[in-house]
Amino acid sequence: MSAQIIDGKAISQAVRDEVKQEVEELKAVGVEPCLAVMLVGDNPASEVYVGMKEKKCAEVGIKAVDKRLPGDTPEEEILLILDSWNADPSIHGILVQLPLPDHVNEKTVMERISPAKDVDGFHPLNVGRMASGDPDAFRPCTPAGIQVMLKHIGYDPAGQHAVIVGRSNIVGRPMATILSQKQPFANATVTVAHSRSRDLGAITRLADLLIVAVGWPEAVTGDMVSEGTVVIDVGVNRVDDETRERGYRLVGDVAYDEVAEKASWITPVPGGVGPMTIAMLLKNTVSAARRLSAVA
Ligand code: GUN
Image (cartoon, rainbow, N blue to C red; front, side):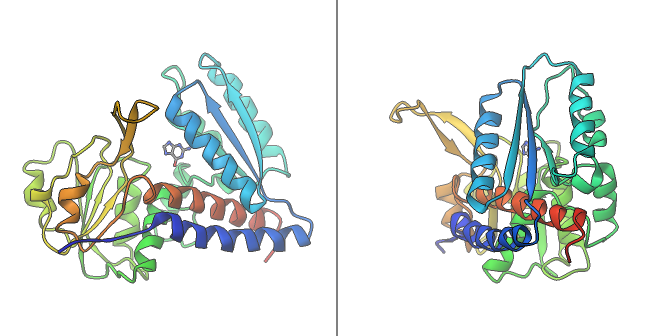
């Protein structure tokens, strides 16, 4: 079998078109959706992600407030900025790009963001709401975007075995929560594997749906995948490539060519999950603006 490609660029464009329409409707009743974004330090990958998020906000008409802080900014200063954003009625969504520098406690920062403006869905209140099946909880953008991709290709995970490789709070854990819920385009039997799983290949070969978010290239190779599996590659890794002007290229966590030989569907890197994450962030921001402004 040779896999069909799940085109994250095209699917995310459809989501962004919808969001753009919603932004216009909100602006017509005097609400300008606004996302405040904070980046602490100069992590090059984070700078690229934040730049991309702000560019996509502009394209759909969402205002972005950009706060770049030096890597040695005291935690207290970060918290005070979050307090001012929480209190500012013109700001509807707040995003603090992760990872934060080592001297800053990520948990303290996430807990300071108002749950009503937590468009990343990382505040423990939103994590708990989502885990208990509340459909109104903000859902973390990457797993929510993956579910939209599955809908788009007409793949219903109900009753299927979904294997998630990776247990991060950003992707693996919320993905398991979403896919195991008694809701449309979920209802899967979910296994969460990770770096300490024994004989990972034996587990991944059982997957009907395989979602890989571990953070290293070629973590999943062709021999680890069964024929017909739907494969979602969340990884974005830089590998040296002298043939490229910038000296590197981006690859996922899946050995693409050999896995694509066996999968029924596969996401490319780049152009797969990445654009969906941003599209869902825009969608969450519009939802936050709607709720905070009490627009039905
Ligand atoms: N770092 C990597 N992914 C994300 C994300 O989805 N949100 C934030 N805030 N930081 C990240």
